[in-house]
Image 1: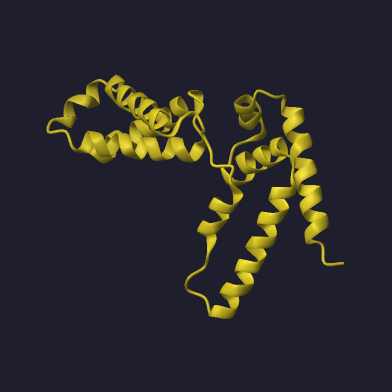
Image 2: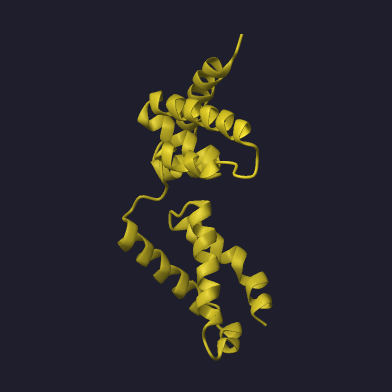
Length: 162
């Protein structure tokens, strides 16, 4: 029953949260949390007839998130994000090389202008489209394209061994 509810309403809940200025990853997390809350109810079958309750729960979770963490929608701290990418199953030599590569990437991101870094993190890390990033940052889509081109060009030059 809950699976049917999830399949039927999770895409529309996700779109709703994106329209409320959520990142794709936060929207996915909030959709999951919404259904976890619903699963804890004794009589969640009655919600099948009224999906508005789902949207209210998701909206309240979004408000709670903003109260707890502020309006910051994404973590543009490259060091924090890149620190989560360590491969713990490979040999120590591979881990050391990977850590050096991540440190190099971290340094490259730190040298980018703040707006360019924000655009890069939204598009490449959070998975937003250029249009979504433009809407969130309140800039034009062509500005997002320009910032991405700048970021990729600078990073490409720095990573080019030749």
